[in-house]
Image (cartoon, rainbow, N blue to C red; front, side, top):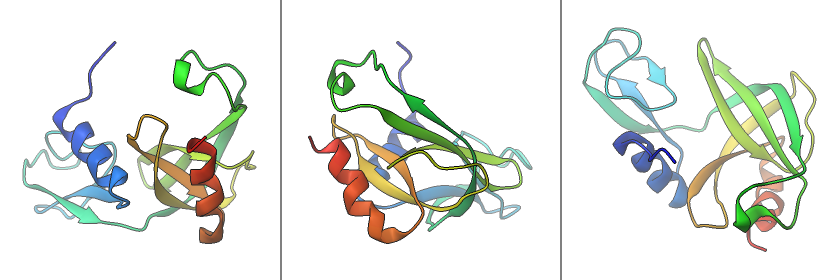
Length: 137
């Protein structure tokens, strides 16, 4: 199994603390996800973590019926959506239920069953508690 990069660990740490922080380049101002060593736009290594409240649109959503991770073998099905956050930025996020393509969503920070910070996507922020509850079982 491949380990997370240092930047991936930083992102998970921020998410576990309830914050969505994404890298933003000092040189060209581009926001990027997933995190990397250098800016994908201008190759600068001057990247800062900035608190963001990203919104986006669902590209596609899948329903996972079988998890190979022991911690997620029970409680499914699980839904995961690919979300467009802007030009060239796509994230994957857990959802409360199936979301149709082009649904407007807000990304939120949640903790999975292993207490890792992960991204969630909700249609409205009042769904955050219900989404987090799916992972607290």
